[in-house]
Amino acid sequence: MKKIKTVFTLTATFLAAVLNAQEPQTTAPVAQPAALQKPQLPKVQEYGIGFSSLNSYSLQYRWGNESRLYRIQGNIGGLGSVGNTPNNSSTLHDTINNSSSSTNKTTTPINLNCGLSFSILKLKSVSEKFGFLYGGIFGLSYSINQSTSTGTTNNVYSINSGNSVNNNNSTTTTKRNSQIFTPSIGIALGAVYNINASFRLYAEIDPNIYYAYNNSTTNTTGSTTYPNAPNQNNTQTSNTLNPTNTFGLSGLSNSGASLTIVYRITK
Image (cartoon, rainbow, N blue to C red; front, top):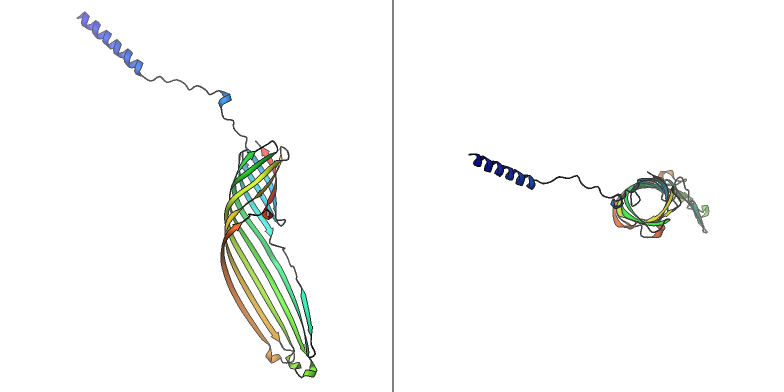
């Protein structure tokens, strides 16, 4: 009986040792040497002012790190000039029996464009001062143009011709209103120059594919008066709605290049 108990005890002890040896050993992970750890790039923020085509300006905010920046950009500019811009011209024709004179005047009270875009820019340094950038851009712009053209013609017939009753004054006023919505998608290609630790200068072009919807209306009013025959006076009015859709490529030339100076904050 004692032999049986001894054999049983030895067997149980052996089985316990085997099972304990088969259990997985858990150990704390070995810390990676500091020299092998990937360095964390410092976070940066940039506030900038951009210029393009001498008549378009932008305010920009960028954030990210030294290799990737996210950018939000708001643009505003004039398509030519903003305000009243009279364009006067006159002609005078004399013949034996009659003479005529005409005057044309054009004013542009509203003539501007604005837009908003979002970009993801990759930066590649080639030296301490210089680097390159590239990335994707999605933008939406809106432009509006209103103009008024007025033309006046005075026809005076010679009294000796016996047709003085046909003397007349005619005036034509044309009002044009154009609104253009333009979504676009493209890429940014450019270079960066580090002025110092706080200021940077960016130069880039932004070739893109765009779709433009132009909602254009034209209102024309013409009137003719006969000083010697008031009953012949008449007025005509016409309205034209001409919406158009356009697809195309833009920003492929350096004429649309932009320069941006930014103030940089590194954390």
